[in-house]
Amino acid sequence: MISDVQRERLRTAFQSGLLRTHSVSPTGSLEWRQVLKVHRADVRPETIWELQTEHGRSVVTGGHRVYTTPNPRDALDAECFIAGDNVLAVVKEQLSQVRLLSVKQAAPRQWMYDLTVEDNHNLVLVNSRICSHNSPDRNYHFRPPAHEETVSQFNRVFGYIWQDEELNEYIQDSLNEIIASPPRTPFANVDSMVSYRREWTTLLLTGGMWFALHALQLNWVADEFSYSVGGVSLDLEKSSKYESAAASTAETFDKQLEKAKACVNVIKGLQQPRYGTGIRSSFGPFSVLGSTQVRVFLPDDSAVDIAIEDLFVTDRPEIRVPLDARQLRVCAVASTGDVGLHIVDKVVQHATFHKSLVRTVLDDGRAVTTTLDHSLFHRVDEAVLPLEAGSLRGGDKIVTVDGGSVAEVTVASVLLLPPVEYTYDLSVPGPESFVLTCGILSHNSGRGVLSPRKFVGL
Image (cartoon, rainbow, N blue to C red):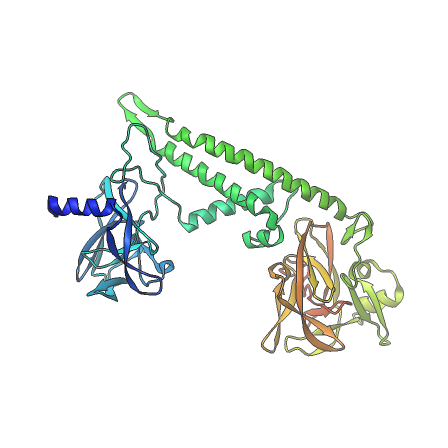
């Protein structure tokens, strides 16, 4: 214990901004950093853990993060450690790894204390010498100030924040809400939505905020059950503090979602099939040089350029007869990079009303429109390998075939488009690929086209 004189000196130094503590920088330097705040936290929702090293023991909450390296991203919750694990420590003014001799859960308590340290946001625990994150760390329940409680530098209602995993879950919930709201706009993941609908980022975060606030409100409701002789009573006075915030955020989210989906309605109206099946717009066939066309080679080695959807329904005998006889060929590329002519096994129609499309435009103006999960190709060392069109970004390179040789061309832009009822593809056994008239190399639909598959939908 410290004496009254020492306590007063500490108080004076803190109030004047001169109180310092040992802290570790992300580059591994031991530094003296200012103590910005002193906190007293109500830790009843937390478990309490005792960490023992050869230098001594420290008691922390289960959610308090302990460093394993100077990189704060490598810090772990105290409750995640077991005896024998190594943690970062400061011994004799030097950084080192020390072994945890024991890790055990301690008795619960109401109050614990912590610091906020400038810049590095960590401090060295004097007994165990462990480098520990400062406050706040993780808490599941946010407790706002109440009029009957004292709030000061030594006694405040402690603010809990979410872990990254929790925030990610709320943002994913927001994404699911956006996808499910009509008209349906499917996205593979958050990264996909932000890439193709960057203007929807605020909408996504607003939805995540609503789910987070709603979770806080539910936590308060759960906390405020009080038991009496007459039964169970529920006090909603404090939880109602979040009700207005959650309601306001929900209203904002609904307005943003309505505007976003109104834009989709307009775009979708321009893209819906009107002149038969396939990728169409209300202005007629969706025709960009080679965007859905393929060059097929007849048995006499003559060539015909035809849209894949037209190849599916064609009744031209010079094409239909060799197609049915598996004598129609297309240019394809093996994984080794060898270019050659290969048999078209089938022309496939896919129902893709539930799949968004993506238009990939190259630097030289060539373009192709596919479903998000359809694959184009890129080079990895000497190999030619597939990658999903939905994962492409501006600046990436994809494989093309020009003059019988494999080349790579830079992607200039990608544009997300609404789904269409049907899309079309080829099955080319062997290389499992084919070259569009524009020269872009596309993955095929493979064999067994009636079964579910990953690569669908030109």
